Length: 361
Image (cartoon, rainbow, N blue to C red; front, top):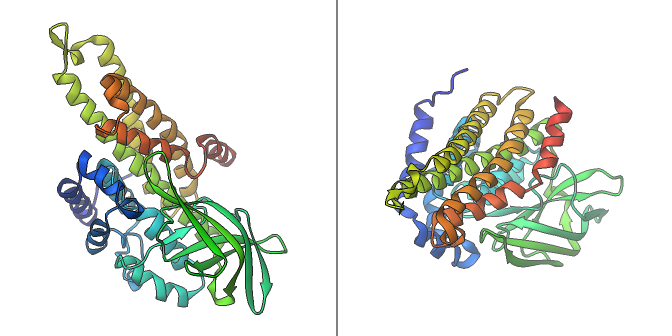
């Protein structure tokens, strides 16, 4: 297996690394979270201009036509910056749901706007292979929707929502509901890491038949696998960030007349976390090279099951080494750990992913 990055992937990594260096530090990240919808609109437009939104999309859609490795490289770099812009949840995931569906009119209308940074969409539940509390009944050549969607990551301020709804026959329909639809109410709130999130309530919301997006099951599974891989890679980047900052701290913080990093007990604990970090990196790389194979989703599930737990353990250790300051937003360690908490629990608990991985083995 070849784990070396090609020229396009190296360039993409350099572009995102430069964005993080130029645009992010602890204070500016806190500032971005305090803005409307929890991120910087200027950063969003710049990421679109740099082609970050376009990485996994087909060239005929205006994308870069790159594979899972490029997606992982991108999100690992975004993770190292603990970037707050919802690139996956508001651009890549809803866009891929449209690109892989059979509704070419919707795809042509929305994907160029998404890739340019002009429009954002929310997804009712990124893990949902089925509906999540929304019922759809056929009416007047379209559908009438009733129910609730409890979590739409970065849904506040989105121009529309891709929602999974249950039809009377028990099957699932993916439908695009525009934000201004009559009967749709969105309530905004924040997750543990400060991410702006929305809860949706739908009361007799009318949707036209041409708002439905149907998918081949295998194509839909790959979309969710790519989304999960992106979250794994982002978590890896966050782990790298807070590990590196803690290592620097241990080399400079003195106790009993010596750097605390010189104490053998601390060295052993850091070595344990370095091992977990490298294991996580290896699992992400292994999953990327399996893209296109029947085992791709299974390898992503395996990576996610491990990284979700390992990242929290690493975050706890980095906080312990910093003492009380480690839990605050004054340090990247505290900010990063909160982000890892969300990534490890969203969109499902690690045990659910592990169970699915074990069943496929």
